[in-house]
Image (cartoon, rainbow, N blue to C red):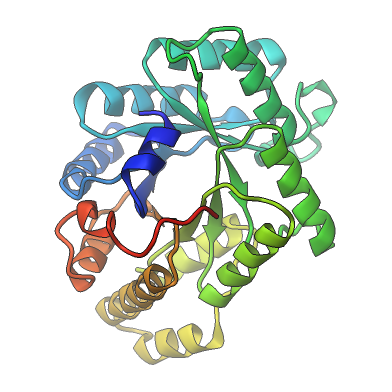
Length: 312
């Protein structure tokens, strides 16, 4: 389903993110968790893309399998790093042939095994250029839907570390939207005030596309540290650190604290007319399902009438 149709159907979208498994055992565990999350009827799910395209085929295989064997609507990530224009064209053509309706266009991370990687050979240096190229592909008729691919981009409520100047950061985000992005999905955050400030600054900058809030339930201390690093230094509030500190040494207590924190984030976001919530699942289902239960939901249809219709 094209992202415009998803937003038209769901007043408040709920979506999940997965990363492609690297082993057969990981794949089976993921599909078991996906089967449990499928019952929650999310608006869509997204699949990540490794640094420098390192999971290119794995991402494609997972996306196509989800499309062919589940009721889920998968949105693959696509990055600029490590790709020429012809490669991007081939990837988009394959996804169009597989019936994939939307893409998430990202700048991407540098390959970890190539610290001196030269981006000079990359066709696109910034996500806005990739968005613009996808739009050109749409105009060429590559996709059976006359609208072509819907396109999402990333937003950073706490600021992008590569752009310390927050005013310049908003200029870059506006450039992605002006290039043709249909929506923004934010990086994970733990303090809703950062999201509300980001949403307001988007409005002031003339950015009027839907903004989805990225939420990651903390389930282990190690996982939180890894994700904070991968998420470009996500800020962990002192109150959350204090609560996790009280639970230190008790893995189940840490998980309860993390899930409770994320649940309260979701309650507050819903009360403040968030356009959508995007769960970073880490390929697990339990935390997300517990949040649903705490919110009194059996599936995401219970959120579709929440709040008023808003854009941005």
